Length: 326
Image 1 (cartoon, rainbow, N blue to C red):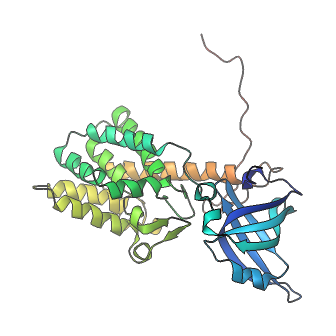
Image 2: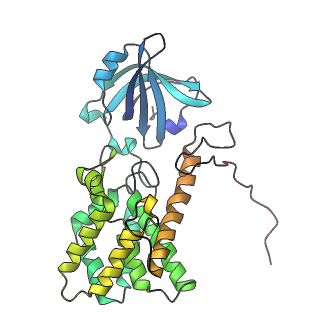
Image 3: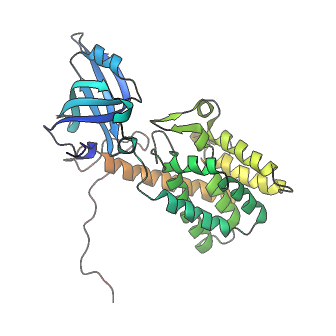
């Protein structure tokens, strides 16, 4: 019998399955009865779950980030599927296959890394080439980049999401410089795109759940990335201070606005381009993920997206036949 993946659950289905506890909250009804609100996750999605019976024992049995085995039935609430949990227990370590529980990029990490290495090989500025080589010669760095998420809750919030985000940005930015904005410094754009979010490998823990590290909470990925770049550049003899200033400005300004977390605003054409490419890939991916994960199958629009402040239309245009030009 196969897994009961969250994306494949159907109304009325009974199941016994392993899921990861994404969030947990204990509440009480108006009548004073305790119940447990859970969000459960596997690699295919997230579903809400309710524990109505023996909620105090269930609360002691699981914590956020635990893998649990649940016996439940699929029901519907507010036009969305959720689980009514009859029993649950914390899973034994040997029971859990993390590859089934942790959302991950659907793209090939090895191929994306190879794509980045090929672009680095084409960088003509010797200082930027050496700097990028320093990062990608570090096995620990490459390993962390391959599994890190790009965010906790927004875009690319899954293992390998940071690599997927950077690789998409590199292809977009490189094409724009080559075809639309040739006056920009192509090597600087490439280096800035690859390194703009480098601090996220320290900011985020992408193991059992995506969460902020102490450094992430206290310093943030922009500061962490700046320190990483500055530290590597200092090991290179005669790295031009003006070039380092331009590169670090890209990192400091890539969020684009003070209210979005940028210490400074983009003040060079390369920084402006990278900010908008970052925003383009992040927000387009957020829309695609919102549509893909929406559980209201009978609705044409997604639930309200708090970050982007709108609903999204889920119906895709039908293929048009007979429009080939010849």
